Image (cartoon, rainbow over all chains, first blue to last red):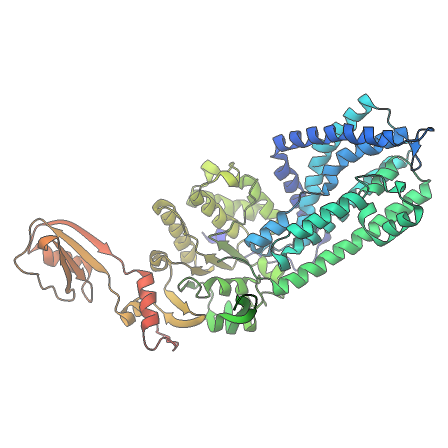
Length: 283
Length: 328
């Protein structure tokens, strides 16, 4: 048993490369974990696609005689719907209660016993999950939509990389928001109330129920600047359909990034506070 | 320097109790009430007590997942809560009632992920895994997702997961709870092996006296958050008069109960064909030898004293508020 119990010298320096390797390994495991639920992915794709048709017909019905609504033309609206249906599962606005469940059952203790900060390890897992979702959940609606509707395709070469960046930031930001909502379980035990509030506000204010550009301009500015919601969903879609000139696109992505940093910082603060008052449930 | 040090460690919880229809009152419950304890490197410590005695709470404070209300704890020279992440690299923890493995991943993938999480060099990791695989018979379910494992298989996986980074201290909170005899034996055998190597300190909480007897020389009993016994098992048994019993089944009843030195007859059952002896100073072999000369033996069984009974005796003892240290 000698070598089984031999003591490791703990790495004391915060080696960036080693941290990155750890992060990558956790993300890869997130990918594998979610990849085990294939039937769930199929069911999700079917639902997203059916709702894609519904939403697309509704959005196209509100266009005026010139074929525009809120400044979008019909092609842009179709792209927003179908790319949005795919992004829904990648960004994962709804349906994540892993952290809250683990706090409620006391399993959170196992997360705290790892040498990795919980926010970091949950974020890595979520990026892995998003990676799997972008294959299993994003591609199908994006490929099916154009078969039935005329969609808008980006015309500037820089749009695609900017869209990818915007989606990655949206995933990180959305993870942070979900983490905060879940973390209320440290104080409340039962997160259903907080979850309902989150579901309602994110659906409306992130631009899922209707594109936020349908709103009066003052309200739009207020939403973008004062809340993280538009950065979760509307921004990547607006970048994709080139709703704004390139400098504005960049500005919106920069705003997204600011929100992501703010929310992740909040996650770490909340986690730290929670740990000081944490009662690990159960014997 | 001791591997684990606790000085006046204390944990209080505030609960709200209903009084009357609407009113609720705050009450403070003391789960751990000033525990002082030192554990040296390589020691195997049994930490027992009834449900709610404060065992798990102590372990949670030592591993850094729970903030003490007062007092101090040091594990491997580190402050558990403040330096939790650094401490995590040097300790291993198995909670019998929780899992630290990833539910949807096969064991093999979980182990591989742990290698990256704990940043263990590949060769060291492979060597430890190889030994755990052979000692705990992991091979047949190494590729099974954790959610499909039986409790015994999962526990063997948990033990491996806790040891792959070569921890200096291993905390085990009821590691044999709910396991069948074979799995229990596998787990105990493995831990005994680990203890023999001598460089891992082991802290074990359990309700199963056999775990303790097999593994730990030192036993700490905690009740209502206070240490009520710190010493060997033998010292505990002699202090509270609990004895092992030898149950002898005879072919035919004896005319009168036999007198064996150091093992008085405690009960006579089944019309005199079953005799129960309490072992005081005699050994089992002496009782069997003594009986064999008197009657034809059909069966012999040994009943270990029940830990619950010993612990229950401990509470009823008049000096139970006194901390008694008995040399092992």
